[in-house]
Image (tube, rainbow, N blue to C red; front, side):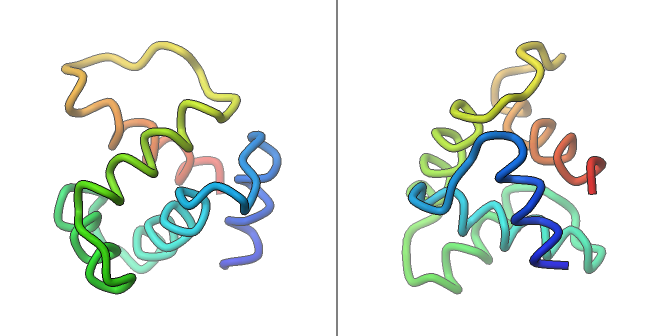
Length: 92
C-alpha cells in the first residue's frame, strides 16, 4: 500500500524532500486501515514521529499547497485540509 501511496503523491507533484510527504504517506496508510481522517490522526502521526501535532498540520498543509489538486473544496477552511486528504485517499 505504501508504494501505491508514494506513487500517487509523486504523480500529484509532491516529492520526498517535503516533510509532509512522509506525514501524508502515514496518514493515507492509516486511512487505508479504516481510521478516520481527522485531527486525531494528525496527532497519532505526530506522536509516531516525535513531533507536535501543529508541526504535522503545517507540514501537511504546505505539502498539499504544492500538489496538483483541485483549487476549490467546499466548507470551512479548517475542514479543507481533511477534505484534500480524503480526495487523495479516494484516488488510491
